[in-house]
View (cartoon, helix red, strand yellow):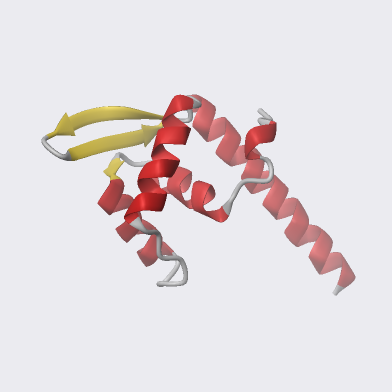
Amino acid sequence: MRDRRYSPMSETMFHILLALRDERHGYGIMQHVADLTEGRVILGAGTVYMSLGKLESDGLVKVTSRDGRRTNYVITSKGTDVLRAEARRIADLYRYAKEIS
């Protein structure tokens, strides 16, 4: 699936969708991304929650539960399709770059 709004996808959106292959809340997403990237990418709360709102309104993530102030999210099948398409695009870029090395 190719969604032109998400191609190319920002690194922030990519990491959030990647993190939401497992159910997580906003702070859990921030921790996961920092761990995954060994601290190279640090997402702020405002960025994460603004991105989650956009991703949810576009149907790429959905709310799974709300407990007080904590809202949990997970990627949808549409989100998975968009994430896979972006991963393929990035893999192609990497392959092209290797060809010129």
